[in-house]
Length: 204
Ligand code: GLN
Image (spheres, protein in one colour):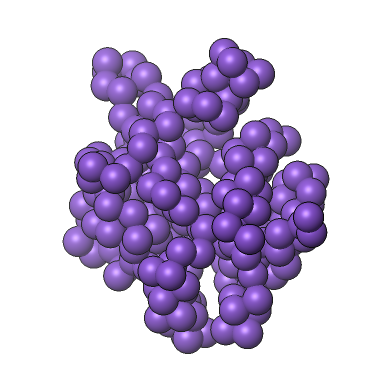
């Protein structure tokens, strides 16, 4: 079987580390900035960064509508942090830009407050990084969003326990769409990328 070709949306944000992580998992990683590049990939990563900027550049580069169409026809997409916001059908912040959408979730941007704007936690990610799959992973949250509500088709993969006793959702999958609040690409953690490469390989 040939390796899937996975695009990394490279308009703004932390795209280089995703490129390396995908290659380490056996995929062929390519940069996506144009429609022709988007058309040629078997999957796409939307990296962290600033969701308002990425959303604006998606429109400037005329990628927003083609990306929505490819998602509607089943393209696997993995959104980390700002990428999670862009995959959400709904965002609590009504000044947020129009997202690409596709996942039946309500997301809150910059959800962890000032003191904990950036923090780390060990997370159990169901079926990917739990006791049966190499133990929990170290998750890095950087001005991260969280998922406040999930529709019935959404599978919750991980929650983080916070000091106030709440337990919000920080990783989820809905069919061909995967989203995490945190950044696995910056810790050398490969299990989520491995899982996503599998999602991109199964439909081929
Ligand atoms: N706070 C950013 C946003 O709202 C996301 C931060 C990140 O991707 N690390 O887009």
